[in-house]
Length: 149
Ligand code: CA2
Image (cartoon, rainbow, N blue to C red; front, top):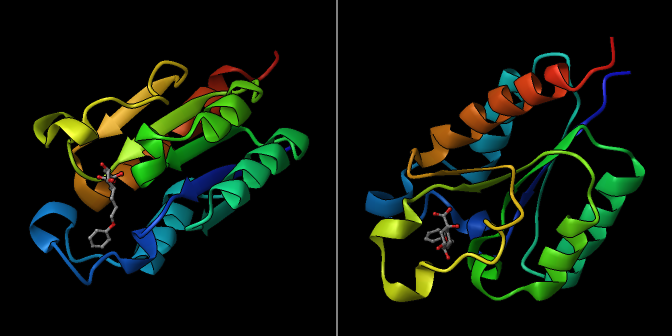
């Protein structure tokens, strides 16, 4: 079965490409979604964005029930604040890639302490919008590697 990959995006990322291009680039979130679908090949992609914490929690539950082959998540500001998203991600049995467009470790103190990194399989930060395609390729490899037989 070709399980879907869930790619979840947190608050304000719907505004990508409109402000601070020196940090986040010129690419819009819709364009990133297209890049992800291209990188995924035959694998179905659930590419979503929300400014609401509860909605992201519910999408993680949906990924658990689907089941998804993995979750790629850019929690944006919720990275540093959301125990609710952390608790939901802890219930997901497969690989989780935490992704940031910018290198959060080079930024102000408030962007330094991710709650998600402790439970993520891998973290990608600082590759710009192309980091999403890198994450999808890595997730495809992880999914292949965990296939039985
Ligand atoms: O680098 C990333 O991907 C971040 O997750 C983006 C978050 C920030 O809180 C994290 O530290 C790093 C902020 C997203 C803000 O979205 C914008 C959208 C358009 C223009 C400017 C910001």
